[in-house]
Amino acid sequence: MARAGLSSEKVVRAGADLADEVGFEQVTVSALARRLGVRVASLYSHVGGSEDLRTRIALLALDELADRASEALAGRAGKDALVAFAGAYRDFAREHPGRYAATRLRLSPEAAASGPGGRHADLTRAILRGYGLTGADQTHAVRLIGSVVHGFTSLELAGSFDHSNPPPDRTWPRILDGVDDMLRSWAG
Amino acid sequence: MARAGLSSEKVVRAGADLADEVGFEQVTVSALARRLGVRVASLYSHVGGSEDLRTRIALLALDELADRASEALAGRAGKDALVAFAGAYRDFAREHPGRYAATRLRLSPEAAASGPGGRHADLTRAILRGYGLTGADQTHAVRLIGSVVHGFTSLELAGSFDHSNPPPDRTWPRILDGVDDMLRSWAG
DNA sequence: TGTTTTGCCTAATACCTTTAGGTAGCCTAG
DNA sequence: CTAGGCTACCTAAAGGTATTAGGCAAAACA
Image 1 (tube, chains in turn purple, brown, orange, red):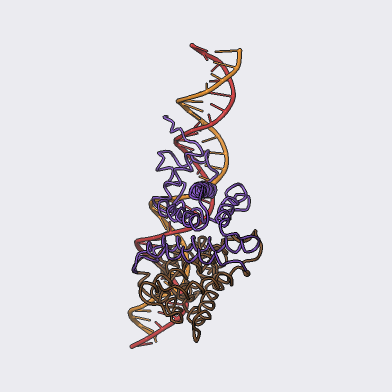
Image 2 (tube, each protein chain N blue to C red):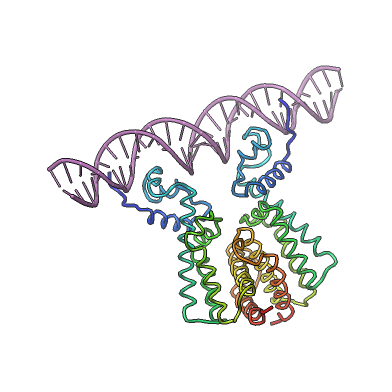
């Protein structure tokens, strides 16, 4: 009986890859076992079940996305930072649609607190340093950026922009220009 | 053997109600049959199966949402229209979270073409009449509005704004003010 | 009233999830 | 270098969901 040498991390990573290939919804313990060449029951040593598997994929994806955003932000400020941050999100979603979908999973409070929860908020907040926003204005601005970036990315991924011209690549910078203007005159 | 007197429409509507109560993901042929007091197999006379059921719920939700948006837009123009339109989306999502989630389902090209596909785009476009935008500018603007409204709504529904102050109701008008400004100086 | 339609049923098959309990590779201690 | 334990993987079994096939009786209609 040759061992496959699995571990929790390998299983979750394989699950994330599977999600990117067939969609997060389609990630199932059975499909993952098939892909890994083991029996279904074997995976239950590594993950707690279907729900746990999805949660762990979501946490992995959230972490990877935060890494990218963090890297994009390094050494930038103001509009530069905004464009790089938004681009990191969009690129991640296009390269890893399954992982991106996973980040939208509604996590249980404990799971959310367990790590990436605050990290994303902190990163978004970091963009705003160049705009001089504080207090409630800062919170509003964080929500604006999150809404625009997630909204656009999510609609693009869903194919909502597929059957109209010009291509979304043309719209994206226009929207970011607008958000930059908004942030510069945001203080309320 | 008393008949329940079901029909395609009743089944789909019950499915949409179920989605609002337990979440769109949890809508299953079995659960719906239980709720309707019939055997699972009986539903297969009314809908083509799990996939077809979800698609029909999505189309119903899309239609209801378009009705609301259309009503909100009637007799308004410019910022008034924008605020009413965005409010209709957000209110619909909060009153009918399951239906709103259903509208995010990736429809097959035929299903999308079958009706509500263009209706939403047309409605969003109608907002812009007050802003005097045409051609590519109009398309960009439609995408901006869609991104912001869907992004904010979706994050709010996912609970992303739950653990920070001020409440989202305070952020919403700020964002719409900003979008209004953006649209007024949009021509590019 | 007799016929057709059809709404709902039982039965059967197949797949996914999860738990219980067994077997054999691998690691480490003596 | 071998005896023990750990654990990665297995088989077996039970329960839920999806789907199809075929039957019966209530409803609709002539």
